[in-house]
Length: 437
Image 1 (cartoon, rainbow, N blue to C red):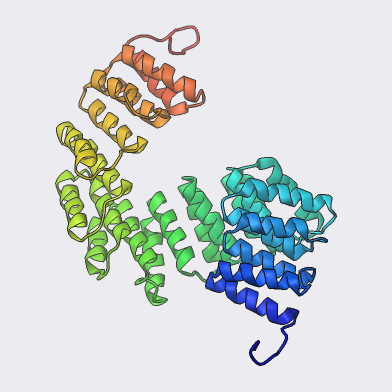
Image 2: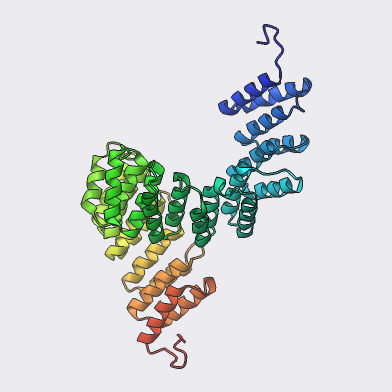
């Protein structure tokens, strides 16, 4: 074009800039920007918006912010590009600041703005921001347009009543909002609510895609709803979705969690291509059932397939040893993780070992292990020890462990119940108020 002497205009530059954005040629984009400045196109609104979008998509956030600061006035497209870009690139706090600035400058947000800002709020778990955005959305009559983002924000804040309220108020329960609700319930461990939401999807005649199938199968697995899971499996086969890796992996997991091990194993064996997630799902089956021998065989097979075990793989084997009560094997495996695989155990792995040692009755050893952890133990680790103290009737260690839990979470109801039983068994209950002393 330049060789033919044709002078490019603003539209031409916009097309070229977009090409650089998709082709990830940031250096050429910078060179083109210099030419734009020389030709006086920098002030063109379309040019500025496109250039900002290019920098955001390339992850050059400082340059994007520089372009944004230098170019005024800002239209809603520029605000959206920057807010969404900062959110997606791990800077949700800055995204919220720009949304506040947008409001101060009098620019009216659209549904794209709200969706990006709600995502930033949910990442940061800022309850006040999400509620304020909801109020603004309602005022502008746009609540239904970004319903999925609003449902997601409330779910991540554990405000499930608000999430349900928004969901019920939507004009249409589409696949995006429905899947968001099911996924959030599953992620937060609310299996029953997730299953109810899945049933609602069926009542609303929502046509499931692979993502919604995965979320719904997770709900069935967490709730042990085998019949609904089997019904969904039949629907998946009819739709030709069974071969998709995400769906096939969750099917293996669902049948495993529902205790139908034979079907889970058959589905695993039928797969031609097995990734690490597939192997981990299969390994989890033997972890749940406490079959340490088969768990070990599957773990060895993972490496034989040329795959590198991850923290999930190691965790499954440790849990299998814990359920089987094989303390020596578990401790040896922990050493092997460090020595043979150069893998640094996580808090969850150490918690499994504490649980294993406690189950075998070695309370003193388990207590020393908790205190010697290279990271601060959480309530789960301490409660594993407390449960072992109850089983072994060790009131002294139980009281110490309970005190550690109270320093972390004074509302740990399960720990109160466990400590009550320990004191009751050792006749350590104050008859005045029934509280452990």
